[in-house]
Length: 129
Image (cartoon, rainbow, N blue to C red; front, side, top):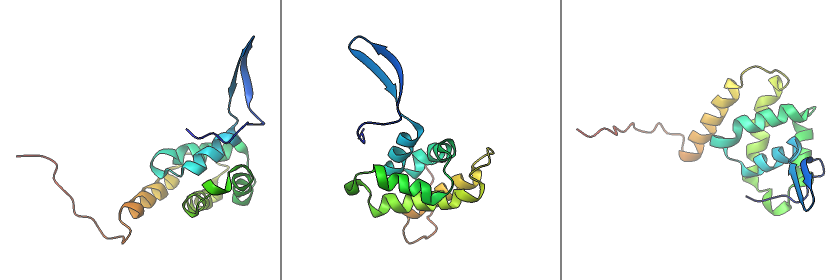
């Protein structure tokens, strides 16, 4: 996995002679998940981390991504994924209830990526007779 460098907010969980184990901060993980831009895998994590980080709004979250992410990794795809997911989330970002509405957004996002013309795909029968 790609690492963004030193996490200034990491928590040390073990410090022995010659061995230090740290846990990444929620902000560090948030940026890594945003850079991965995997709607099918990271949507729930990104929502959880957005809430855990306590961002005031989407602009603040995007500013963190801009500040911490290497420019070469901040592709239009990454920016679109993060902005769209977070904009969809913002009206209820402070609620601790289910993120089913955002999961629906992620399903639509996956569908549009696999079917860019947004056509209804025919069902296939995977059972063999």
